[in-house]
Length: 174
Image (cartoon, rainbow, N blue to C red; front, top):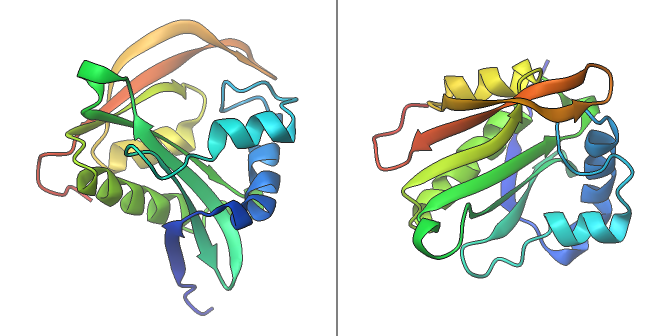
């Protein structure tokens, strides 16, 4: 089996038609993101596509000419909290396990550093999303808090969410 090269790059408006099926598939599952599972395309685009200004941007991961994943990066809070980044990742279900999430994570963490963020925080990592938690922990993130019953999982009912954090000023741990 040949190694597939994954290119991560800034997304443009022309990428939305390839991003939307990924966003729709991931969100409609109701098991990893707090967005409403029946979110419409207009609202999803508004929430996911960031303009590349003010240290906020959306990215895509492309392999063999196909968009297989997307991520976005932004300040976690405005003003006095804007030195901490927040980010989200989505990988096409058909591409799970191919390194797309890790490639995007490496790229987005590098971009966060380039933008001058000092840390990255995830506010709501669903506790049942063990694949994501494993990835983040392998990349130096730690669970710094857990909020009980904060997510209405489509199949499991109320489940906790974790707050995960990583200092970006330390040397690379990936």
